[in-house]
Length: 444
Image (cartoon, rainbow, N blue to C red; front, side, top):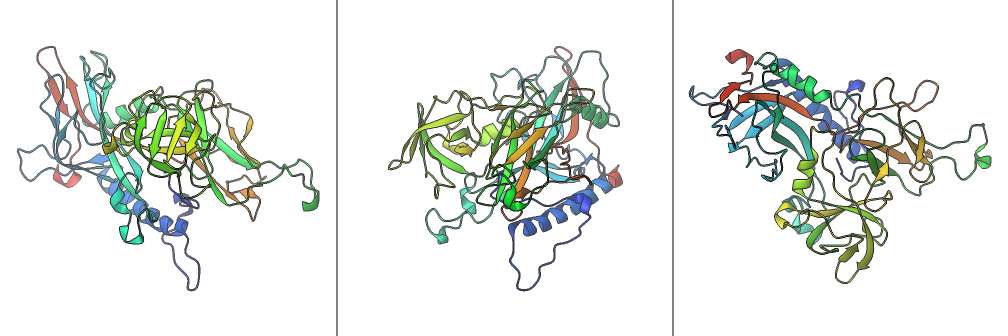
């Protein structure tokens, strides 16, 4: 999540059950957020243990489909019934929709990947959590604090997307019992083994006193930071790219309009640290691009990065090195904004992922993408790692082995959850539809 956080410290392996405040102490965002994460982890784990990986409560009306029931297939679309479903303990709620009009789908009829297949296919639910700030939801900001006042908090929102998995004619046909495992294995195959990353600060090999340390050792930044390393283009080494931010990617500037390569912004930022200037690398983001980035394809579409060439401080306008190539930022209803990154880019391309080598970020911080053991590792678009850097210790907070070596870690997010909904076989002019949802255990 691209929030302005000091760090994210929740780890279920620590088995903490609560966060307790002490009198006269400073309150930190990380500790309050950890309490929320502890409670959510407990509630969702309990729901998953009781209900299973995915289940829905049947409607009291026996003729109703219940939550996320698929019906009305006509070759071009199908309906999704209103109701609730729990996926890995996460509550998903639907008000009733169809495939093309689902609220977070942002589907395009001219894209082949979005259109319904002509052969048999599986309909499934992809569930994940998205960070929502005052840029995407202006009502979060308290206007009583003044125009352009601070965005005191952010929100997380459960996003569900109805997706399609084409199947070969005559291939294995999943039923209610086998669909969840079948779906999991099919999707996991494209993204395993996952990419791993380790982080450290650069230190000399020999033991030296603090006064003897060269200026290139340790974290040399002037402030505490939460670094974010995020996969930009997915794939394997040689294809995958990444970008990084010292502010967890939280520097975002709302877009008013785009005219060619000129972007008019609501503001250029609160100050030099949290604003945009000449030479900065940015990307254009809106609700559609965020939701479209969640994909189960290794070659998922990714946006271009841009370099700021000129800044009009009086008019709050910036000129990019190229005219935006797609529709991102063109619709105010989708809450477009610029997100600033602190890494470099080459003609819109992010940094290449190179495995088995320590890559420098800045101020002594280095990262290493781990090489594959037997199979090439796959980097999924949007995967990210968070690296807190602290001035007092001159180091980063990263788990280490007993020998002091930084450990390899899977991405900290984004975490996707899946549930099968239905199997559909068009059969030419006719069709077959099989419900694959699992009802609550006590209502079977």
